[in-house]
Figure 1 (cartoon, rainbow, N blue to C red):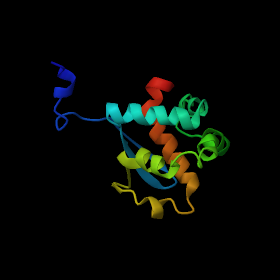
Figure 2: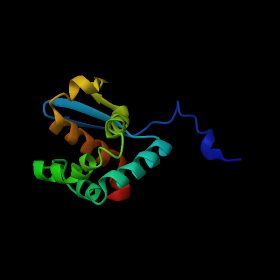
Figure 3: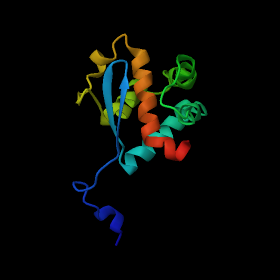
Length: 131
């Protein structure tokens, strides 16, 4: 019998991380193992080697050029993938100032913040593996 599947998720505590980004407090709860693997494979497919640029950065701040460089492949693949849905899935375990995100309102004409939050999510979930 596989005991890994018997873990009671209600008693398990997932890793949380909080960071101030452009005046707001963003809280990320780590993905479950299955979700993390599935999204990680998609990240590698969409971002390629640029994911390593985000994860090897030792401090929490990523400058604008690093951000643009890291996410350029994501936007290059917009036509081939449903990237907006994928981004929403990445944001699914994230709170802004303790509340659920309203994607269309919170990120309307605010794409730099979106990229900074995505970088934070990626670092929180994948730095130990890709970094």
